[in-house]
Length: 465
Image (cartoon, rainbow, N blue to C red; front, side, top):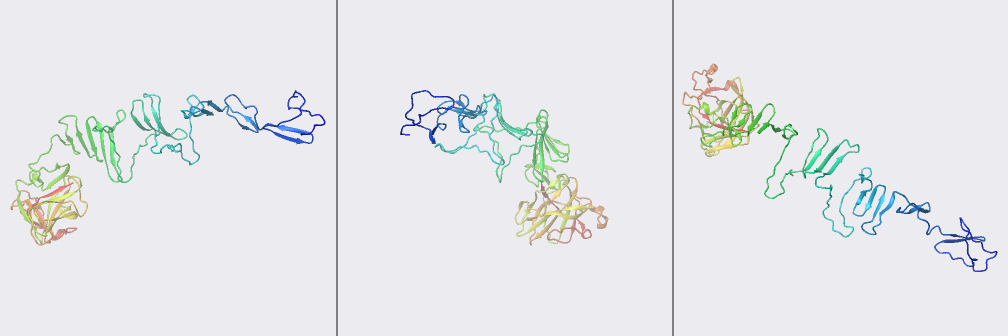
C-alpha cells in the first residue's frame, strides 16, 4: 500500500458513495483492514456503533450488535448510592435495595427445589458481623406489620402481626388447628413483663361467649380449669368430679363434687393430726386427710396406748372418705422401742372380713412422735364410701412401742358390732377388731378361718392423699 495505486483506487461504503478529494493514504483506527486481491476491506463493527433500543435501556451484545430491552433499564442515573436499575417490575439499588416498580406489585425471593433462603448480615464491606435484625415495616402506626406463613395455593395461612393497636397477634387461620410452644430438656415457657417491677397478666379469652379453658395434660393424666360462669373457677377432673370456686361474693364458697358447699375455712383445735376432735374428712394444707377411727366414732375415748404384740396381727374396719391414691400413712408413737418397726397396712373387704393386702407402710417406731411414712409397698387406691380394713403388726424388732389409740375399755362406743358373726361366738359389742395369732410382716392375704374377734385398743392412723 506504500507504492502508487494502479489502477486508480475506488472507495465505496455500504449504503452510499463517499465524497472527497482523491485518497492517497488509508489509516485504520479501532478497526480491521483486510486485503483480498485488489480489494481492501475495513471492518469497524467491533467498535463504536449505534446504541440499541430506546433511551435508558441498558446495552448488551445482541448477535454482534448493540441491543436494548424495555425491561432492562437504567431507572435512576444517580452516579452513586442513589443509582437504580430496573429488571422487569423489580427495582434494584438506591435506598430500595430490592423493590417493585409496579403499583401494589409483589417481590419474590425464590430458591430452587429444596434450597433454602437465608437473611443474614455480613462483613464483606468491612463491617463487624454480629446480630442480624430483620424488620417488617408498615407505613404508619395505625397500620399492620405482618409476617405471613402460607402454602402456594393460599389455602393454609398463619400470621405473626403487630396490629394497628400495637398488640402482637399470633394467628393460626386454619380451622381446629393449634399453636404450640415447645422447648427441649428442662427449658420452660416464660411469660414476662419487660417493665421493671411490673405485674405480669396471663389472659385466656374465649371468643364471644366461648368458655375460657386451660387443659393440663400429659399422656396419662389430665385436669381442666375453666370459667363457664361469671366469677366462678371450675376444676374438672372428669367423670363429673368438679370443684367450683365461687368468687362472686364473700359467701360464694367452694362447692365439692358431691354438691355440698363450704363458705368458711375448716378449723381444728390444734394442728395435731391425732387430735380426736379433728373433723373427718378435712382439708389440711391443701391435702385431703382422714383420721381412722373418725372423730364422730370416738365418743370421747382416747389417749390410751397400745403395745406392739409379737404374736398378734389386728384388723380394724373403716369406710373410705375420699377417692384417690394415698400419699402417706402416719401414726403417733407415745413410747418408742429401739430397733423396732411396725407395719400399718390397708386390706380390701370381702363379706365383712379383711381379704387382700393393698399396700402397707413399714414405720420405724424407735422414738416417740408423729411419724409419717411416704414410702408405701404399693399404690394404695381407695374409693369413697367403700369399706376397708386397716391392719397393724410388729414387723421386726424385740421392743414394744406404745401407739396413741382409742381405748376400748371393755364396752367401747367404738365397737363395730362384729358380734353378729356367730361363727366367732361373739356375744359382746365390745369386740372391735379381728385378729390372727401371728405377728411379723403383714400377710398378702387373710385366711378367714384363722380370724377371731377381740377387744383391742384402736391405733389412730392418719391417711393422706
